Image (cartoon, rainbow, N blue to C red; front, top):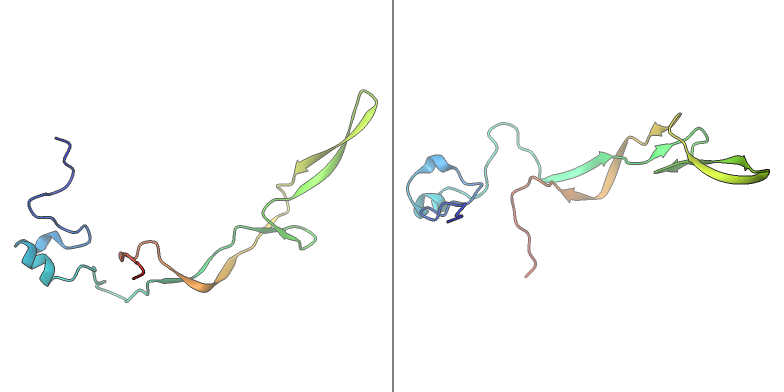
Length: 110
C-alpha cells in the first residue's frame, strides 16, 4: 500500500521506458538522456540580475527615501520604499560557471 514506484523493473527516471527488456536493457542504454538536436552544455554562464539602478546610478536590491511626517506638532522621519524610475541590472556574467539545474547527474566527492 502506498507504493509509488515500479518495483518490478526498477527503472531510473531519466532512462527511456521504450527499451522494454529488463535491467540489462537499462544498463545497455546510457543513464543520461542524449539530446537529439543541438548539443547543450551542462553549464550556465549568465543569469538575470536581481538588482536595480536608481536615477543617481546607485545599484541595490531596494531603494528608500526619507520623508518627514508631522504628527501632533512633532516632526518624525520615515522611510518610504521607491518603486518608480528604477532600471533593472540586466544580464550578469557568472564567474565561475554553474551547473544547470536540469542536468541529470549526481555529483559527489570521494
